[in-house]
Image (cartoon, rainbow, N blue to C red; front, side):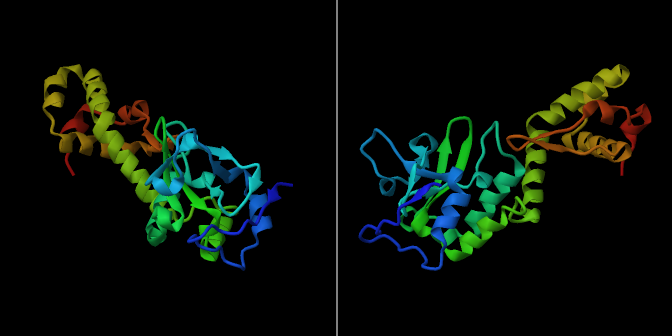
Length: 231
């Protein structure tokens, strides 16, 4: 069992709620509890955000440790729409606490790493209830997950999908290549969207909160006549 050290808070620091079951919480979430450890002459209170590389798993738990919930963390290669949405929800609901003086830091690292670090002494009973609920269902708010996924789909369309779709469409109908490259983005998206509906194709949200769609399946649902159809 992990050791729980209920050290007295430092002068000026918030005292944790007395109702909180610290030992139960620490043991059930011990893989998400960290200490700040850096070779630099810094303390967290000097920083507006924390570097993920400066957080190490805690061997002993005190109220100065950090809770870094894994379901609010990710990177370009981990996490996804749920973790992004959970982080967004937490910051929206607990925005008053989103200051280092109140024991909450955003965490950043290489390869797009993101997280939230909360001093154990800064956790409120309300926060604890919400985090415990994630043990039964992994997201705070389904509506925010849908918003995050739509944002990822729109970003994917703007950054690469519309260019790739235009190219593949021109390959499928080489006799209409010049016309296809003259389509406005709005015309191209209409063809794309209509073909998605005809083929029952949907965006897929992948690790890192990136979005993917099956062009091959969509293109099979497009005839030459569809190129001139408009809603």
